[in-house]
Length: 315
Ligand code: GLN
Image: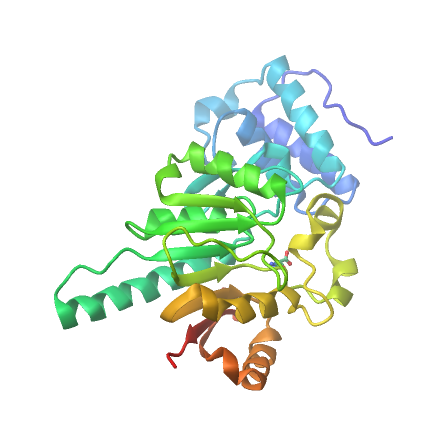
């Protein structure tokens, strides 16, 4: 059995962090130091270990605090992602509830939000200068909302936007709903338990055609699934990651349905694998009837092509 006890000495926060870091390292847990810091600061009610003040750093932890830290650390020892261990995580500046097996929002996806917000404000400026009238608030469809991270960030960043958020998993729909209430954004969002696929019932659009569709779909090539981290393989819903043989199973569904869901000149914003921009471009060329154009490919913070902006042409 793995050792799971820090003993009951008078330990300060830095002592406890080092103790669990050491246990994690001995047990081959990735990001041992970060994991330990996250758990200890969470129990002490701080966002980060660095933000603990000197008083908190010098005060011995109570038995109850040490017990809590031990319980959470034992979950991490089983390779549970720290986001699930804590039951919450920040995405952009939103604090969201996290719960297995709902997909944990990744840091690179924050750039998808910024990119859409930039594109939206560019559109507003163009329209405002041309027409000098207020631009109607955009309506957005999110396919595969998971914890609600993308939908909620867009609602916060794009004034008066409205989102239809759908997911095929009830666990995801429930978590999105909880996060919507946590942030009091229920007036601008519809959440639907719905599987977007070729044969599925037509999606009812509460506000008519969409200005844009956004998705971080499952896009991992099936053959790469087995080499994902144990954290993912053991705890996350693998349907949220497995994109089939070419990683494009859901991407193709979204693009096939997009023309019927979008307004003229509406856009699709997707997060994809770096191999996908070329594959998607070829696929769109082979499907000219969809009237979709790949407008832009944006890189993530590692410099990898990661985000696609696809636009509907008018007939
Ligand atoms: N980038 C993700 C990961 O490797 C994959 C996300 C996805 O398939 N949408 O964890």
